[in-house]
Length: 173
Ligand code: K1U
Ligand code: ZN
Image (tube, rainbow, N blue to C red; front, side, top):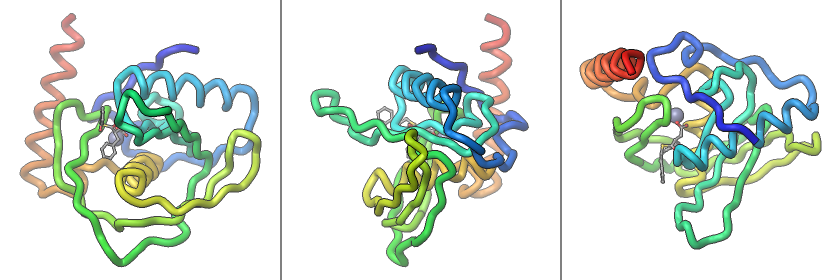
């Protein structure tokens, strides 16, 4: 397994709509393993393929925050929201591509999602709580959307400026 480099906003690859995964090949399974390793190492509760420069519709997540609890890694290929609740939930979201910045985002409290798993089988599940927030955040990444796109233009611009500065500092190291 290898740890992958996480792209930092602003990056044109984080603004693109990703095409579907055509086939679940050994290379796709390997990418899923590497994405999970990268997510746990960060640490994060989710990671979408474009965040590591892989322009395809797949994501990983594990919203079990308790380090003592058994991990529940999930890999979702070509995920689609098939139903969303009218009830909403507000969560202060973060993003591994926008380190140390947070903002309140309102999303449907529950969603049903269908996807292809690593065996090539179609799955469908209903998510709530942090799992629902996370899966919607990650599917947004596959559509070139970031959590800061839900914030006001001033806050978005401020965060973007901070990230430009951070990238310059990191490039100097
Ligand atoms: O997609 C990403 O950038 C990962 C992101 C997912 C996410 C966070 C919060 C709400 C929705 C989606 C993260 O994992 S940020 C890090 C984080 O939330 C976290 C890190 C360690 C422990 C617990 C949470
Ligand atoms: Zn993110």
